[in-house]
Image (cartoon, rainbow, N blue to C red; front, side, top):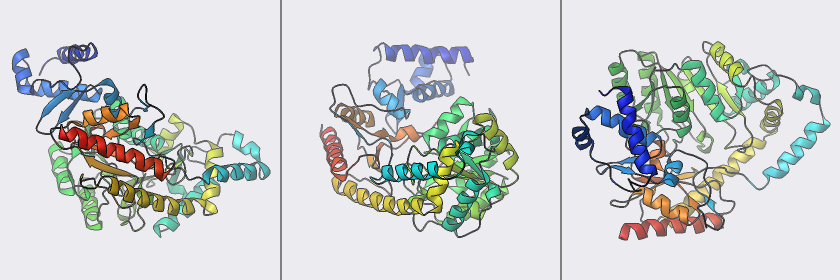
Length: 454
């Protein structure tokens, strides 16, 4: 293998060629073996070079076709950066992120703030709270989760975090070490990838079945790593972006593998609230080794930066320490608003409304994408739209950006070393009306059809 300095030298040289236009957007990089032969490198080193370019959003690998230079704008989308309409675009429709907000939520916030101001000791909201959250807020969360799962949850198991991404950050800080591998699905959440990259935590991809993470493949990975793997991050209930819901038998098989190899399981249930009849959560099947993250940003609102991290007692000391080191505690005002809405049934009502909204928007998307092979869970806020060869996903993303429409190439979700399917993720939750959504989806369909016919 090339020395680290030489490996980075090739990365920087290619990055400069891309930035300077010497390697144009859409240009195909040499096959890895050809590049290796031309520069006297091992093929594994070239793989590392191309992987680093992809991590920086400068290149993308496509199944059976090779590795291509991507435009800076598309690279930013693939890196899950904040999106803005393309220059010259009028307005803009965000189909890259899901921020589902109901019309009545603004008035609900106004009323809740009035009630909070009129009752109780406001000085408590200006003081520090315990690292895991105020006891009353943890009780409210425990009661809500107990109703949801049909199984008692103790307030002592709960840590209140400042949103789902913060909860994942706390878990990596508490449970992961630099250089120690963590298993993820072959397509995984970009926010988890970003945290791992900052901490030098290598992610090991596990192949998937139509139902989600493959327990047999995980067992093989564990054996290959000879006991070095300790943690698995997964999205078994409404996977993002695939929209799969792991069947009960597959969950039990996953738990069996976890117990055999003494693995910890992190269950990210960000979209799980949309599945009315979901199988039991992993936490209920393996309570001694599962941490679940339940965010309120989707069932509640994106600005309600509250998530509930539910962990077994053996892990709580490290989680508490990580919480103290990262943010001390979640904002007391946000936690109290969340507790109010959990206690009076507001979150439950919003959940039902958003399930109906998601189902309606899935139906709209299916109609707009008829004949294009789009897939999505019946009540999910996202769909996968294939991009047929020889059309490239980057071409579709760039063409839509010029129309002021943002979408996400699926390779943004690819675990390190994995080549994503040729598809784009269409987020359905942010447009403020079905009319706006339908018009944007029709443009997406037109662009895919036009580029495919070229």
